[in-house]
Length: 294
Image 1 (cartoon, rainbow, N blue to C red):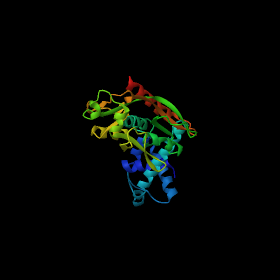
Image 2: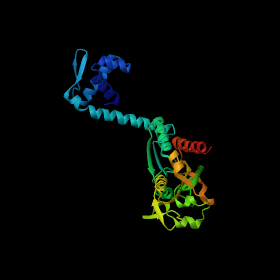
Image 3: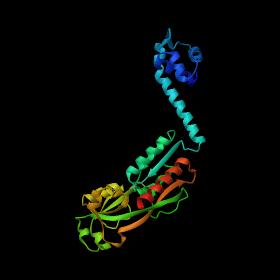
Image 4: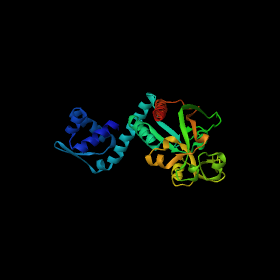
């Protein structure tokens, strides 16, 4: 039994004619008929009822349609994956990322890559920035994208700086901190800080809080939205102040440390050699960071 024979069988059933299937396949009628006869001989059953120039599936022919389609689909996937591999394309790419960059960027970028590389399976996991190192050390991902907060080097992965991200300490325009002409660290400690939290060795941890009174959340977008609700002040990527509402409602705190540039990194496991798609994805992030800051 060959996949080409199953493809001919399905096409004949769809078109209701061996001659019509042969024309669509650019083959002679006798070639298609001979292939179908060989398939029936191999399986020991009649798959088609032939009446003049028309054909229709027998009961057993009808019952194997779903399985035949699955076999054909699986074979096409195998061929595509092998072609991808021979061309240097990854057959699977596991990505972990934080939410420093807007969701729209990731959605558009991965959709475009999936259309260009249909034989590649993409897995993406969203994690708080400080948690991503643990993901890489645990071999969860092939590549990770995240803001660096001065983590130590690791033997488990190598890193490449793709650009820099401007972080802004912001607060609701009606918050008392925004009414001050100059804000000190002591002022920041007096009010609730919206801080990033992450899992560290099975314990929920706040990442470097300034205030002793904080509201912990795992992602920057959530932190931004809670600041919009006047709960407290926070430090988030400037790229997430996307809408006019964000920019009108949240104001930069008037203190020297309110604006900080931080590196944005790609982390890759030492045992993984970057393929074509991983390199292209890194370049797209570089291009986006450059265009966003210009």
